[in-house]
Image (tube, rainbow, N blue to C red):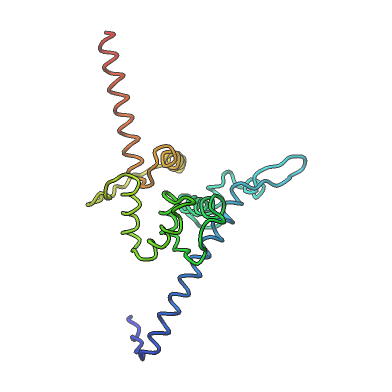
Length: 209
């Protein structure tokens, strides 16, 4: 069923555009608030009996990942990115940037990889002028000197819950250690390093034999 299209006057269309911008800005501000809250749920401890335990443990969850996925309905990776946004913009650069320049979750997530006290406002102004995809490319180029690869492909793998947990943890660790964000790139680099190590071991064994 297709709803009837609304027909607006020019003034009504202008008002709609202003409402959309206002809602978008409020959502961007909410990103900062949610990032702070998720950061607190990750790091905060609470006293239970005679000892302090993580709040998510006191709430009877096995891990923080279980908490955000089961109670809040967030994918672990998404929740971790919200947390990272707070770490960068709410802690590391708390008083170093113009809050009126706050961007969307997608853009703020990308900027966590490149901003510092000297360039944060410049990057935020650039983000306001670019689409999310163009900003991602700018960030990628700033970090690597190369444009993002084209003709991306996806693949599907069936895994158990425990295997999925391990993969997620490895991807997050890989993002930190390798300095890359895209999950496929992280997994490919881990695979390349494993293949290289395997080949070195095989060559060593052949020499020993």
